[in-house]
Length: 268
Length: 331
Image 1: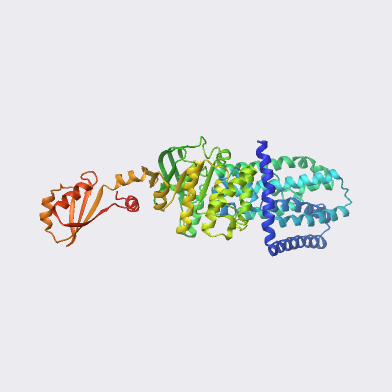
Image 2: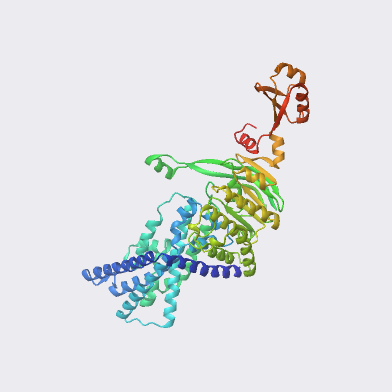
């Protein structure tokens, strides 16, 4: 078991370096990817600025700087997710309908691992720099203090957030094993990610409930951010973050494994 | 080595209704249709055998291969390969087998061939020295040297197939599954792959199952033949046996010096009812007879005694004719 884990970690690096090499072959593509990534972040920043400049100074008791901090934090789990899970989007088409899963199943490695490793979106990691800038700026405005321990907790929470996204979207991708005709669950769920970037308390009860216990995107950015912003009333939820991450990922992996048993390959 | 018992695979697919209204109906109600792709198939393959698995398109060849390799889970029946139940022990099992699909590559599309090989070394955890030895041997056998730095997507089909073959053999598989490995290749490409397969079967004792539509390949490579049709095995044996079983009729054509009286000749030879003889043109006579009723020597002797013959041809239907007849259902 441990041997198998070590093998997979070793191979993750091998796959990654292979991927970066091919990525560097298409330089123009890479540059364009980086450019649009930064542009996207800027547009969202302008949006937050406009929103708070014109209307009241606070939304549901949250100031501009709080929202900015939450937004800055949310960039971390989201871009980690974009970087390491982009291939989930291709599961239905490329792997199930076209039968590329055959090749995956013939190798002595975990199938989900292989699918994830076959495409990595390195450009998304650039977003982390933008995110760090925003977090730093918002922290300065709010005079938050950073210690090494806090940075570590920040990293762990960002990682947990990535796992929550990963688990949710692995679950959705696994549905393709039963309904290979691309059902459009991915896109609406993608849009729901945006809800997690703002304080969950500003939504109505039903939406809050969904964001916490059904599609737990509130645990990705909002609850982690409250820890650094010093809102102690959310502390129980903060402690739940790793549990939610583990459970979500476990659900995703189980659904995937169930789906594999349903795989019917293609005609030839 | 490979044991298959009562193997069956049923695909369930739903009948799609057409149009917008149909699509709405499909959402709530699905009318399923079962297709029996593999139907109660049993066979055993011994270590070192090279078995041809043939049948018309849609006969269930690929489905069987996919169950043998652990990609698909059988609906019912048993598969054991090398002691493993393929789909249940995928991790361990896939270490011991090699698989080549002619229709799609197992290599990574975007990276050079040699880096694909190196990545596979890691995946299968092949010892570095062992890996180098084997690779250099295969490179020589299949003349891969110039292809190594090229990304797979830039290779021709023949080149890619050679690389795929090597990729499937790097980790010392005991069994090699080949699903139409020469599909779409030219004569030279096919020959090369055929030679390679014969060599590794002979020298390493690798057990092989080969599906193909090229019957020359079967004749030259396979000691044994499994023919499937509509999901069932309809023949299991060697090629000679196939000829015996399905071509009871043989034919001898005599070229004659003179025109003869056909009726007179027929009564003089005194064949029994199972022999059909006919005059093709004034100077040639065709005699069709059953394998078990007369020997060719017997027929020739009788005709020679009664007619002026200057040439004799014995016609044996080709393996293609036989299999063509089996496929079209007139065996």
